[in-house]
Image (tube, rainbow over all chains, first blue to last red; front, side, top):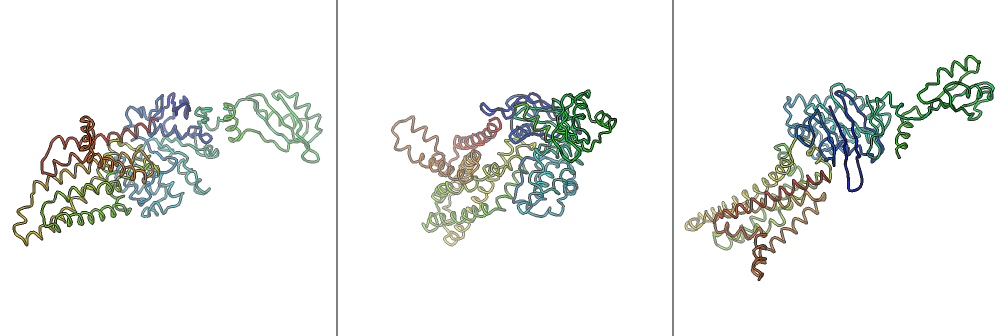
Amino acid sequence: MIEITNLVKRYGVNYAVNDISFTVEDGEIVGFLGPNGAGKTTTMNILTGYLSASSGTAKIAGIDILENPLAAKSKIGFLPEQPPLYLDMTVSEYLNFVYQLKHCTLNRKKHIAEICDVVKITDVSARLIKHLSKGYRQRVGIAQALIGNPEVLIFDEPTVGLDPKQIIEIRNLIRALGKNHTIILSTHILPEVQAVCDRIVVINKGKIVANEKTEDIQNATTGPRKLIAKICGPENDILKALKEKQGIIYAEILGERDSDSFSYLIESEESVDIRKPLFHMLAEKNWPLIGLESMGANLEDIFISLVKEKQ
Amino acid sequence: MSAIYKREMRAYFTSPIGYIFVAIFFALSGFVFSFTTISNGTTDSSNYFATMIVFFVILIPLLTMKLLSEERKLKTEQILLTAPVSLIGIIGAKFLAAYTIFAGSFLGSSLVNFSVLGVIASKEKDVIDKLSFPTIFGNVVGILLIGGAFIAIGLFLSAITENQLIAAISAIGVFVLIFVLSILPNKIGNETLRIVVKWLSLFTRFNSFSYGIFDLTSIIYYFSIIVIFLFMTVRVYEKRRWA
């Protein structure tokens, strides 16, 4: 549905986006993740035809945004970083304006009413946009993107500045929309991608550093996996046993936690899940395992390691 | 394109700017008209039209200053530039909206003025015969053309800044400069320079219209100015996209 090939955006000697390529399949929700200034917004602006790339191509449903901008744009609903709202209009006036602007041919009243219902702004539709709170404005921004029922939705940081309840609502909304649309959303909030997206594209300093299914993103980091185990029993025997265990490349005692247990840092070989063998070994020797946590298993650490690796 | 035109027309009258423009325009034109014709006891209206053009220097920037600058500042231009509408459509719709307000105010106020003159003249039977309709018509066409050129220039200046005050002041500056250029040629010795300066001054071309003469080259001249500045405005946006 979306095809980005060797996209470059250069400002003078600086590269905002440096040779990125990825594709988004039909009906996929892709999270575009990266620290501030990584090039997320630039990529989205190119994809929607707001900016032009220095080189490379962006295609929406096979249509090149540069060669045939109007046809490509009519397939996209775009929510920019700052929702493009005319503050002096009421919500319904604004949505009617967007309806005309997009040359929409669906039944006007029904279509707009449906959208208002989906994003829950029906009760404010007669109010001036300038009197709406940030959360409602964001929803009007999403409503605007939905008009004309475009195949592709592009949301640039859709949950920025919202309160936790609103964030959850917007995420649920995006997930629901994902059933009938192809969606790209950018964010620097990691749980958001985990909660909403099928796939994650991590971008840093204008380059893609990972492009994985959400559940596989952990594999994107290289190097050994680290665990911290809390085990009761004689510490020296345990340490010796750990070091001898196949699959473990490093073990050390981190210190006494409780009166009878110690914490151990364990590093396993690359792509080996040591947790089950570790449990069986300890059970056999009757050394109770009372705590086990993996380090670097959460998205934050993966993200930071991905971003650091390339620096 | 019609969506943008309608929104723009609406925006003029949801903010005070549309009302201010129309009110000042009507007041000024009535004032100027009564001084140049009625109180002078003449039906020659060419002074009225010529004086009004001078006031356009301040009035037209009121219409054009925020057309594009405001959209850029508030980032609402993103919805226009990512919608399936061509740049020419966006710029054209904005131009037409400003032009509609301008032409409406001008034609409306002039109609009022000449009606008043007609009422006064009807008491003195012979005055009405002296109203030269070809001259009036020529002046009206000339003003509609020169106003279009001013609006196109103002629109262009609104595209290159995101501050509407700068857009307005630079437009006034440019219009004053153009006005000065129309006085200057008589004092320039160098023949080539004089022709260039004369060509650049939008006011000089108006003279033939004020005598009721429809000079085709002048009509083409004003249309060219409009097209050139609308095109340059489109170029500003294209260039910004590539920058």
